[in-house]
Length: 69
Image 1: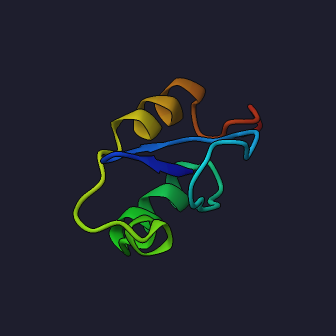
Image 2: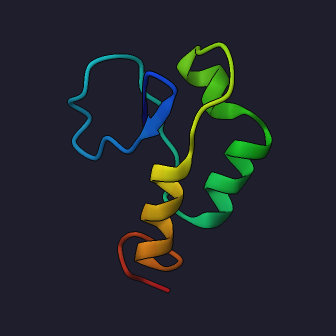
């Protein structure tokens, strides 16, 4: 994940510029990271991040990105 302005964006190839953060792409892991404000700390941003992009992506893939249940 990387922060672009106030949005958190998945960076699957790890090629986007800037500081990145790693997290399993499951609802459980992402929810825990959001509750603990882990993205804000890891990406060193001040203020809240818009997480709609990652939430839409997780909802589109089901429970896990790789398709396993």
